[in-house]
Length: 455
Ligand SMILES: NC(=O)c1ccc[n+]([C@@H]2O[C@H](COP(=O)([O-])OP(=O)(O)OC[C@H]3O[C@@H](n4cnc5c(N)ncnc54)[C@H](O)[C@@H]3O)[C@@H](O)[C@H]2O)c1
Image 1: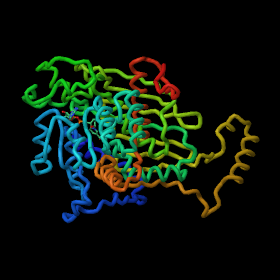
Image 2 (image 1 turned 90 degrees about the horizontal axis):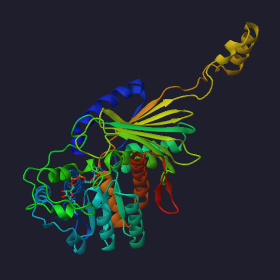
Image 3 (image 1 turned 135 degrees about the horizontal axis):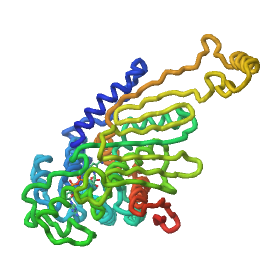
Image 4 (image 1 turned 60 degrees about the vertical axis):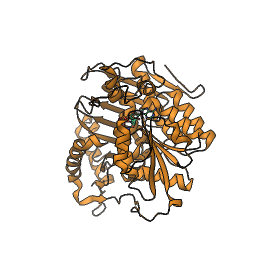
């Protein structure tokens, strides 16, 4: 995200400090190989895409996508005319623009779609796109509700089109390396998964400035509201809904859909999981940004992913800045994963000295125990266990180009993508469960038989 620069800088600085303990064990990860754009890609080999939604995220996706080799944007749709102008500025030519995204779906010159519309429009855009025979890259969270996600998975399966959801860390070198390390058992038996992220500024809490002059003459307010209860245009509130839709459940999915979904998608990818949680219990509140929003600004959720899996505890906070971090904890130590770094803090998982319980033995008994313990456990010279950790450093897990590149390659090759509708739905369901648990003030479960969230 473009507004992440200060956070990134902060992360880079703290990442250096974290890695210092193991400076001699720092390993640099090769970035994903993406060929340079070749001006000479013949038209028959180009992927021609249309973009729907050219807002904060769509403008970044568009900028990145057109830098990829053989990828071309040929049309743009948005409900605010200002974003038609923006799309043309980014592409650098007068590509056709429209307020009606279905014109892009009907256009036979367009191979595939990239969509970055607010969450409450994801289902309709994806279902319409695949039914029209178009592949689609749709932003995260995949759905606005559990029911929407079920409908999207069904549409993707029925049509066989490629659907890739936009949690870009799934295509990052950081998460790929962490996945490999975890699969190789670096931390032994995984006993707990912890993830946190916090921000502490109005922009981080979605108090974005509405565009000056936004009005029904340049913006289709009625269509923008989608299936939400229709409100008449209100010159004070409507521009706020437009810019700050994440704050309201009618349009957005709050912290869960904005940030938790990244944590969950990355976690599922790194652990090789691809199912919804069985149970979720969330606590939250609106403590810092009492600006009329109805979604919490602090949200902590415990997830149960099944009997043989570790508890998962994921915490989001818009009222205190903390770097986004996973801590995979296990019998052989901690694997800490952040935007640029993976750090392994080893633990032996065995007694490294005689048991302190024996201080409750009388002296003679204790000394005999100590002697025997040392004879049996002290490492032989040269055979001391390795206790130093190490650190991998790589490109940001937030970079969108590798994820977009995987999508456009799949459009060409027809090979499946990792973050398909099923994967996207399983991650989104965790977020819907976190929200349902917060609103119902109760633990919730996922009932696969009825595809519903129950208390
Ligand atoms: N992957 C990431 O890191 C990341 C980062 C930010 C946002 N996002 C996701 O991207 C999506 C968009 O977020 P944003 O911040 O760019 O929102 P935004 O409000 O800035 O932009 C959305 C645009 O979609 C347009 N739009 C809405 N409904 C439409 C419709 N029916 N037809 C055509 N255009 C329509 C709006 O007019 C607006 O210009 C969200 O789902 C968000 O969660 C992902």
